[in-house]
Length: 123
Image (cartoon, rainbow, N blue to C red; front, top):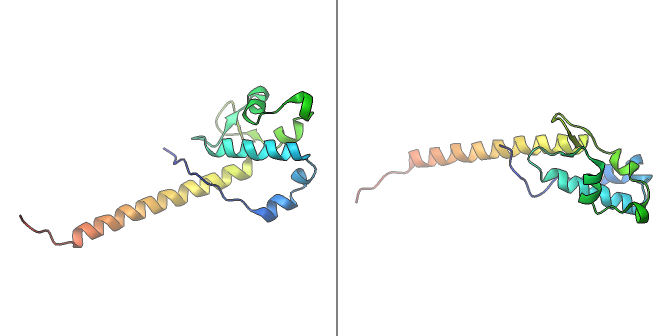
């Protein structure tokens, strides 16, 4: 089961030099980062493939904000049917899951070694 990590790697240079983001309006950028955060907190790092649901998640209002297309274009169908993900975020999520599992296993091995090295005292 994947770990639900409370943070994700954010590269400001990549963010600020992205043409997709540079062409978005400020409210579209806000919606995009909110959807990235929602995506990260899911067990599969995916969101529903449903425009209405995505709009609700980021509090999008068609009358105030206009077109949602630039935001939705940042998400693609994932490996899980019926769900979308952001490809870059998904790669970061996979890498973070691998690092977390490696650290967890390393901690278990270290604890086992410590238990084996600690003399047991009798009461």
